[in-house]
Each structure stands twice: as structure tokens, then as C-alpha cells.
Image (cartoon, rainbow, N blue to C red; front, side, top):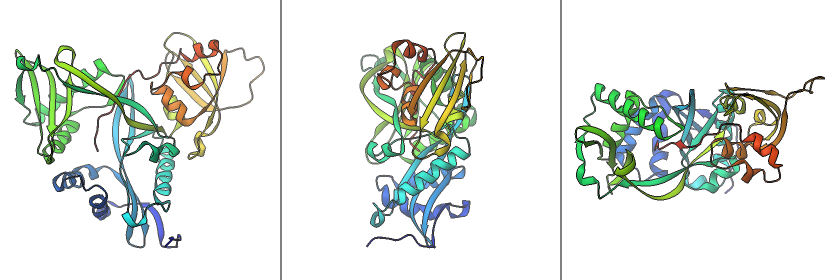
Amino acid sequence: MEHRKGKNDQIRYLAEEEKMKSKPLWNQCFPEDSPAFVSYYYREKTKNNRILVKMEGDAILTMLHRNPYALRWKDTQWTADYIVGVATKRDRRHEGHMREVLTRGLLDMNREHRPFAFLMPAAEEIYHPFSFRYVEKKEEVFLNPQMEPYLERKPVMGSEKECQKIGAWMEQWLEKNYDMFTIRNAEYVKHLLMELESEHGGMDYLMDRGVCVGLQAFWGSREREQRLLYADGKWCQMGNERPRIMARITDLSAFLSAFRLSEKGELTVELTVRDGQIPENSGNFVWKITGQGSVVRRAEAKRPGTNEERITLSADIAELAEWLFGYRLAETIWEERAECRLSKLKQIQTMGSVFLDEVV
């Protein structure tokens, strides 16, 4: 029977004392998660997240969880929402409830000046209509079996001082290998260890003659699997590469303002953007970029006497994400652009490599 929206239907955020009301829907929709993991999630991760729901009376029809993460790209720090727990009651699916909730969430992120949102999709086709696109390819990585005998394992115990030390090691390793990643600190590591423990897992130092050369973690109540391996060069063996994380620009100005040119000079882009869900991102903009940063504003008529170099670009919000996250080259998106114009776009530093390996 088709459900008609009534006056008792509402989309809102759960108050802190209401968050546990969403746990039965989590259990229904994610039966693969162990009770211990779900207990950890609702005890720890909901302390600072926001749960957006659609209610029918007192019942939750649909939910999504906005889990905030601090991210770094070069000298820019962002707070962005990792969207997890997107779920609809089994007998109320395909009625448009998820579309309403996700659209509301994206609009809220725009109003809150969140630069983008990211998620790990159960299926790409679910999020494609909402302008989410893949921005990260994750390569399988394993310990090199020929080198593993030379390594000594030392379990991580998880003291406050140790968590600080591991966070600093992770930051150094990530800065060396990636352009954009979630910031590691003692709090991050502490929650990661609790997350591993909830699935009967743990983390080890990988030591070479007394020096830490890597970190490896395993977990899994039903089947043991590698949760992470941070190590370099000879210690690792690479496997298949596959798309993993999708992202979506939620505040165009906040996102674009972090980009800069790779060389001295100034470039002005007259940018026309189409966004089907967030009207604030749609329209004509002037994006002025230098080697120090950039400024974005709504377009005005070009003033007489202006002789600055300008190029024009028309793009869908999803195309901008694919390009600026470094997932696709500009020439593969805008094939019709003249080579001289594309060469100008290449002056803009994009993210060469993205590393987002969070689970929740």
C-alpha cells in the first residue's frame, strides 16, 4: 500500500537522549555487524555525531548518520561529514524516504559550510543521482611474505601516551604518502583501538631492529581480516585496485577556496555550475586563484578595463569533485575544451592522492 505523507511525518535530527531509538533500525539493516560492534558504535561514535531521521509518528522510517572527521589537505584543515548508517525500514523501502532525508542532509551541510561529504557505498548506483562520485581508489596491500620473517611484532596496548605516539607516526606516514587524509591524534587512535577490540581485533607495531617501520591491524568476529596496514616499500606487496570512497561537494565556495596554482601568477575562471540538489552551488561564479589560495564569488558583469586572464568553464558539481579530488584528469571530463584552455586548468593544484580508510 502506498504511503501518503501525513502531518505526523517529519524529518529532523534526533536529540542526544533519542539516539538509541535508531539502534533497532541499524540492527535490522546491518545484520552483519556484531552486537559488540554495534554496542561500541552507539556508546562511542554517537557522542559527537548527528542522526537525521524521517519519522512517521513515533517510528523511524529512514535514517542517516553524519559522523564528523577533521581532514587535512596540505595546509588546509576541513571538517567533513562521513555519511554512514543510511537505512530504511525493510517494509517501507522504494517510497522516496531516503531521497528526502539525504537531500535534507546535503542542504544542511551547505548551510553549515561543510566543504564536502564522503561515504563508502553499498552500491554506487544508490548515490550517483545525488552527485556522489568515486574520489579514491584503494589498492590492496599485504605484507611481503619474503620480508615478513625479518619483522618483529609488538602489540599496541593503548595507553594515552602510546596513542599520542601512534597518532604522530600515522600523521608522518600519511603526509609522506598522501595529499589528503583524516587527521590522526590520540583521540582518533583510542577510538580506532576500541573499534578493533569490538570485533576481537587489535593492532601491532612492525619492528625492524628496534625501529617501527609499520602498523598492522586485524579484526573480525566471524572471519579475521586485515583492517589496515601502514608500511612502505620493501615491506609491502600490492594487490588489486578498486574504487572505494565516494564524495560530494556540499559547499562549493568552501571547497574551491582551498585550491591554489602550482606556480606563480593569477588565474581567473568564469565558472558555471549545475547542482541538482543544492541550489546555492548552482549558477555563475568567478573563481580567482593564485599561488597562495583562491577566492570564489557570485559572478557580476565584467568591469570595463579589466585585462586579467580569464577562462570559462561549465561543469556539473560531480565533475568538479572528480577533477579536484584528483580522480580524473580535466581533459577526460572536458574533451571539447581547446588544448590551450586545458593547459591553464593544469596550473591548478588538484589532490594527487586521497586516503580515507574509515569504516564508521
